[in-house]
Image (cartoon, rainbow, N blue to C red; front, side, top):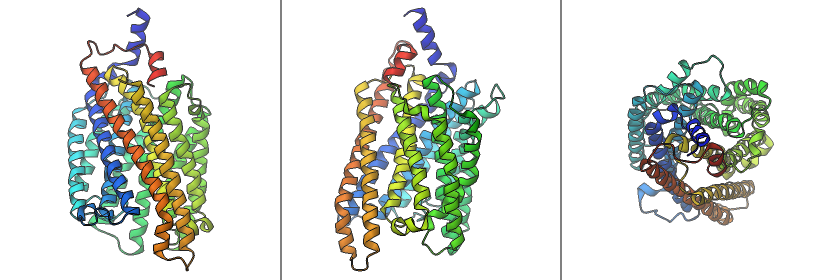
Length: 474
């Protein structure tokens, strides 16, 4: 290997990457495993929507329980684990020194996944709380909170022990996500499970938690990756960086106020929905700034990382606009409490968050293993399956939701007729979910092959120089 090649390779795999290899691979591996499990449960859930008799004799496989298990494994299995892995790595790199106290990550991952397993057993036996995004049984929630804190320790130390005072947008979003989730999670635990509020207030708290978990936790995790990867891969600074702070603080101060949009038309005071509609409109400032800052992501230049990030950003921006539109009362009359809400959720979770995190994983893994991805064919197959499957799923659910809204507004249409009208679109959505599941399974296999190749490599950094790796696997 030439001197230039060696230098480029060394620049790609730093001490920061090598020291965190095992904990980060453990987080990413378990995250992808839960993503596949979640996809299988979501597929079963969609089948039950258009074929209610399927598995109806098994209480564990009823619609409500499979939905709760799919949601739990996605949010706490996949999203939390993958988001934490990417966030810790980025904080370490931007902090300028290897991550410390990584033993906390190992212990935290063990108890976090133990909590998820116990939660699935509890949900399967009827112990779910019935609150969206917080269907974990009450006896599991404290364990999950402590485990999350343990995993986050190296990230907090990387932030407080950073080598320079100058900070970047990626760090802002990362630290916000690390600190805001425990607050959201613990407050929701107290107000919804341990000392539950009553009546209308319970619905308000539940809506606040769902929206807060998205705008103050999952969205910042995805934006952490985007704000790091786009300038890193392109080699250019963030565009219009002077507006970044305004976008960040707008999301933090306005985001959680949009929770009332989930309750438009429900038994709540009218001012709650009005405040949510105004907040959704104000939040467009954040989306406009993100679009200005990261518009370079849409010039991918052949980078698979940027392709995933561009798709994720596109879904994020589209989702923000749709949130503002559907928060208008005249529109909500036709879309609220229909499958349009499910389509928006999938656009956010399967589109904005997951696609962006896929890009981060494709960038991160070669750096911490010292090896390029094992198969370019598997990489391409996963990209197209994720793209096609997500588009099919979101479009089909949205179409079904609009039809459902029109039928519900017509008193002459029976529920049996509504189910018949929705069935073709639900079949299409099922096909989209199946394609997503296949793609995610391919990524899990690809990760296994890459890690095995790294273990059997003669040296930790034997791949080609950085520019070549960027063009093929990044």
